Image (cartoon, rainbow, N blue to C red):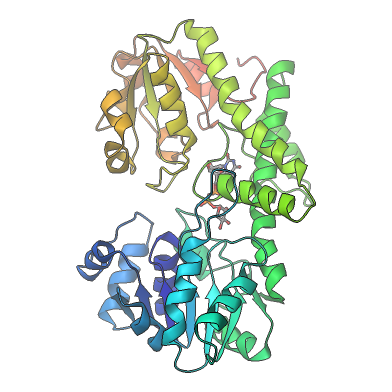
Amino acid sequence: MKLTIIGSGYVGLTTGACFAEVGHEVMCVDNDPKKIETLLAGDIPIYEPGLAEMVTSNVAAGRLKFTTDTPEGVRHGDVVFIAVPTPPNPDGSVDLKFIEKVAREISPAIDSYKVIVDKSTVPVKTGEKVAETIKRYAPDADFDVVSNPEFLREGSAVEDLMKPDRIVIGANSDRAMAAMQKVYEPFHAPVLATDIASAELIKHAANSFLALKISYINAVSAICEASGADVELVAEGIGMDKRIGRQFLNAGLGYGGSCFPKDIAAFIAISDELGVPFTLLKEVERINADQLERFLKRLREKLWVLEEKKIAVWGLAFKQNTDDIRCSVALDLVEKLVAEGAEVRAYDPKAMDRVRALPLAEKITLTDDPIAACEGAEALVVATEWPQFARADFAKVKEKMLSPLVFDGRNLLDPKTMISLGFEYQAIGRGAPIN
Ligand code: UDX
């Protein structure tokens, strides 16, 4: 099929590449000429495992094209996906100005029947607004609006898109639904067909539930710390119940990233607006913020004063396998350490270039490898769950450090190994004495 993706960011670019991979003819549009230039030159502006290879091979096969010209994109596609950013307003509600702008811009170019698909994460009822807008600017346009939320995780986006758990299609017309079924046929995944509003809600409800699961285990981790229990064993024990499941029960510094914090705030805002406040989610947010504060308190208890203390930080991305630092708890942690006068030496396997572009970079030392970050350190903090950190040469780490104190904010390391190597090891919710 001929498909168009408007917005070539994390979601748009990966979705476009995967659609091309299964044989569709895809045109990716972006209004940032620099981004399109980069893509046309064969470079990928983001790090996402497997994406660069997929883009290169599909461009070579002529199935993936890039343009800055929105009308050209609309004329190309039978199905036009909108994958533009939906940033938060200061009150947590979603700023839909980019969606509105795209709806306006595509209207005059609709020259035949088009399915206009909202892929961006939006509050319930946005589909209605997109349809109203297109009708206002192109009263004779033949189109249907569909909601088709994405559920991809950064770091495994290609895999999530190629082998999805489910495809949710919210449409109010059989014609649009049939076109969407055809788009997704090559993926052989279960399709849930719904109305538009339900599809929009599924996205917010799914992300909020996952965040709730994380906050739940983080709240349990605080009780573990106070009582001497081990949150890893508790998570394993409750996760063995198939109704609960072990996934997303990893206690840590809290969730971050471009989705969870924003989507939960947006779900709270839309529920308030609809007159049915979702107060449970406010508690999810509170627990998440508290997790970092409790961790810092423990660090202060150990080091007494943070000012002038050399602290090594491993991990700056918001999670493993990505260079994305948006709403990264690891960065929040570094900001707070710096604000208290600590001398931070930090390392991340993929996010260094992005951090270098921040004003914060002036106030910390970025090192070329994790061992160098530990030079003279009085504490090492593991802030992102990169698996390679667990495989580090801890004998070398210990040699470099001034005092062998490790604060594992992601429960990534093996406590027994760390203790046997002579470290003082502190983690999240692992209150039981380690011997
Ligand atoms: C999330 C959803 O998983 C995805 O389905 C949706 O489309 C977009 O939002 P993503 O933001 O890429 O994906 O990351 P995810 O893997 O869900 O992790 C989010 C945050 O939660 C990270 O900061 C991670 O460190 C944290 N996390 C995750 C935990 O603290 N504990 C866990 O058990 C899982």
